Structures are given as C-alpha cells and as structure tokens.
Image 1 (spheres, rainbow over the protein chains, first blue to last red):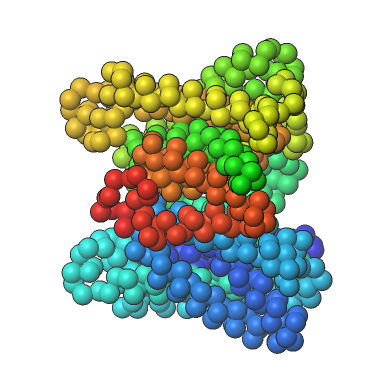
Image 2: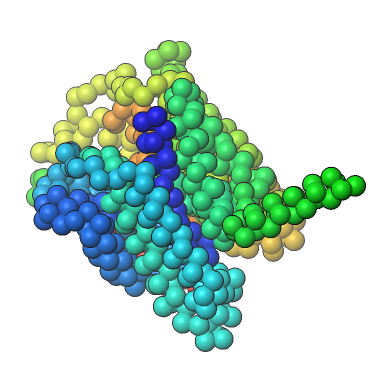
Length: 291
Length: 292
C-alpha cells in the first residue's frame, strides 16, 4: 500500500511540472529542455525556507514559486528572442548552470546533497495542489490570454501583426510554467526528504517535455494522461531493471514516428464530455431496452 | 610560463577529441537542421567496440580503431534509419527529430547498461606511459596520439568535403536541400554518408576518450561539451566546430589549472549562454535570421 501511495504521490509531483510545461510547450509552442532547473530552484528554496527559516510549508512553496518566477523572467529576457534549436540549447545551458552552481554551493550541501528534510508531502496535499493547478491552467487557457498563447503557437508573425505582444506573452508563459515547476520541486524535496543537484539533470527536463508530447500537445487532459502513464511505466516495469529504460526510449521513438500528435492529439477530455458520453450510452441502452 | 604552455598542450589534446565529436554534430546539423542528441550514445558504443576489440578479441591498436569507427558508423546509420528516416518522409518539424534523438540516446545508453553493466572499464595501456620531454614541457604519449589521430582524421574529412564529388554534394545539400535535390543530388545518399562519417568520427573520439579516462555507459554525456563547442564555433560550420572545440578545451584546462576544476563545467555552460546571447551564430557561423 505504501508503494502504491508513493507512486500516486510521485505521479502528482511530476504532473504539476508537466501541467506548467504544457502551457509553455503545448499552448505557446516553446520547447524547453531546462525545466528541471526551475524544479531545482523551487526545491532548494522551499527547503531553505521551511527548514532553515522555519516558514510554514505551504508559505514556503508559494515563496519559492514567486522567486523562481522572478528568476525565469530574467532567463526569459535573455533567451526568449532565440528561436527553435537555439532556445532549447539555451534553456538546457541555464538548467545545467543552475545545477552546477548548486553543486558548488556548500551552504545547501553542495554535490553531496541536503539530507534530513521533514516529509510534508503526501498524496492528499499533492493532488489538492494539482487540482488547484489544473483549475488555474484551464482558466488561463480558456481566457483571452489563452487564445493569445495559442495564436503565438500557430503563427507568431501574424500574432505580432494583429497586436499581440508576443515577447510579453512568451515571458508570461515561461514564468507560469517555471512557477509550476518550482512547486513541483518543493513537493518533491519534502517527499524524498533528501535532495541532490544530480536529481535535476537534463534527463529530468527531457522527461517532462516527453510527457507533454506523449500526452499530446495543446491538451491539458493529454498532459495528465502522459504524466500518469510515463511516471507509472518505469515503476510498473521495475522488475525489468535497466531494460525498462530501453523500452522507454524505444516507446519515445515509436510515438514520434507512429503518433506524433500524442495520445490525445490536441483534444480535451472534460468532465462535461465524459458525462455527455455516459448519458448517450445510457440513452442507447434504455432505447435498446424499449425496443 | 611553463605551466601556461603545459595547459595549452593539455587543452589541445582534449580539444582535439571535442573537435571530432563536434564535427559529427555540426555535419548533421548543417544538412538536417537539428541537434542530434543521439551522438553521445554513438560515441559510447564506439568506445565499447574498441574496448572489446582490444581486450576480448585481442586485436592490435590500429585494427581496434578501424572496428570502432566502422561499428559506430553503422550504429549511427541504424539510428538514422529507425528514428529519423520516417520523420523525414513526413516532413516533421525539427522538434520531433530532437525528441526522437533523445529517445534513441536513452535506448542506446540503457541497452549497454542492461547487457554490459554499469562498471567503469579501463583500456589496456598499449602506448606506454613515459611522456615525451620537450624542454620543461611534458607531452603524454596518449595526448600526442590523440592530437595526431584527430588532426589526420579531420584533415582527411576536409579533403573529402572540399575535393571530392560526394563532398560537393554534401556542401550543396547543406546550402539548400531542395535545390540540390532538383539538380540531381541524391539527398538520401548524402544523409546516409554524413551519418556514416559522423558516426565513424564519433567512434574514433569514443575510443580516444575511453583510453584517456575510462569506458562507461553514461560517457556519452561528454557530447554536451562537443555540443557547446559546435555552438561556440557556429552550428553547422565545420571549421567553426574545430575552432570552438580547441578553444573550449584550452579554456577548460586553464580553468582547472588557475581557478578550480569544480568551476570547469560551469565556465563551459556560462560560455554557451554568453555565446547564445551575444552572437547566436557563433564564431564562424552564417548569420541567419531564424536563429536570433
């Protein structure tokens, strides 16, 4: 039971970071291979606030998110003018730089890590925070601002021409996604009770992006499905040892080749839709019963 | 002054390995316009092939090199056919290539981890360890070999690209794939050739790197450095990749010698960010509207 609980919590922690990234990647069309860096900042700041300064856990999460959002604006200011490959490389460079700084920062334990963190994270608060995260994200996406993000994704130049401040919206998108990543990092730290810069390597960033793409770009429910499947998969295949990442790698290539639009392919699965489907099913059944 | 020159020598030797890796990266970028993140996996496989050729099969040093180059070239082509080929037919955006490359890198790294295991393995010392003395400067035998082998390989590559007909096809395709295809260049064949060449260079770099340090499944991560070198010199430009690699090697050894080795990687990534901000096209790259 503990094992299942742990897995559900871990899925929630990944999901939060993936939700943020979904806004940046799926809805704004910017690809980052550096969000583990924001997770790292969030994790270390949360731990610093809660363990060293004695701030309440939730307040610490919020503070860490705000500061990480600020950091992301600085990084965005520098990198958001770059395009395509170059933006990806830049985000990668920043994430690695953050990790290496933490590696050398002895006050936070350096490369050896920070042990003995009190566990505050559990299944309940992770999924409550995720629920809040989903509600906020969906509201952003369905607002006027959400349409602007999508417009930038589809046609940057045209968006600029019709008067959308492209750079500003990219900044906002990056900031929100960084804040989600920061909270995810904070939850992660207080779940593992030990953090180390090594946990936030490039591979972690790419894992998050892969989850978004696997689920389907431009679909919140897709991101949720992607995060659940791809976090659970290596855990379920635990007995296969190193082979499970061989399968994971092959699965990523397969998805890119066979279903590049991802699982959901830009479509949403909303509660209303599910209800409608169920109602339709019921109606069909009753009709059959009458006949 | 002696320390300084000594560091330049060390920097040149490590920089020459970076150059072999960076050129492979840049070659693929110049034709296909995406960063081939599976390159690290190919380097690692090449290193293992060389290692087993020398220890298990017991073949001489030059034959191990040939085996590593050939094997890595084949792996690179297989990756291309399996992970990129189908995307090319669909004309997929560059991001799909990058994700696919990430998947391929994960696949290669873990298949070695699952079959050969995570141990660090040391190459047999075939060159001897007595360094050459040049006044007060010491030149390690392996360092010299690294520099010479890399230089010869790169010189051959330059000759191939500049002087042969196939080389001309590569240059034309990198300039404009569509126009070259219309002029009768078989671009599929060009892509096949650049992956063979890039893979072979990766194999040679892998065996040299393995001899300098050790062989292990995650050694492919070193390509991050080669990648920085390629961006530094200008992605897609071969002379740029070599220049960037040599400069990066020297900067790294200087940092280790005069500052601290813990700062080495941070300086490398700092350099990457600095270049991207100040001059994204790199030292010798073409200025392209799309990049900045």
